[in-house]
Image (cartoon, rainbow, N blue to C red; front, side):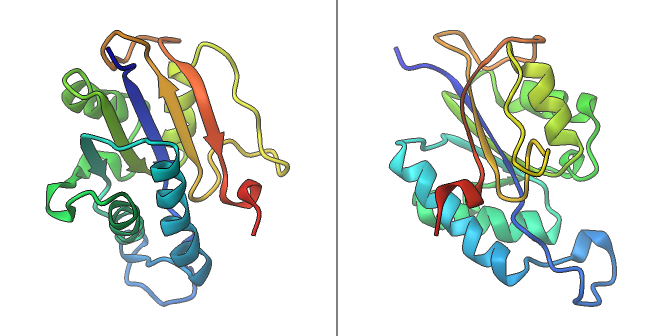
Length: 172
């Protein structure tokens, strides 16, 4: 029986200079458009292929999700756009994981900070390594949480960190 995994990803780098009407409408920056498919390819190389894919509907997360889905061969029409993730608190994110996680072998959640950092710290048994700039989930970072043979759940310290990968750490 395969281990159950929750894959958390922060949206790729967004562009603050576009004059977007709101934070929700902010698109990806050039770097984000490079990092998102790159992280999708990394997931594919690790044989991480979610059977459920949930994303915030904000433009930068939507663009990130579409790039990742393309790299994974995941049908874009099957991505669930979950409003609760945008500006989601820990409780909002836990509710999303509780809704979609129990019957998934691999669940991919693309979201925002600070919620992702809080969710990661809550679910992990041990502490994750910070980046060289002192951050946990940098833009386009991917954390893979392993729940073993049991279902994906929201109990505190329920998962082991299998990977925490940031685009800059993958090299050029």
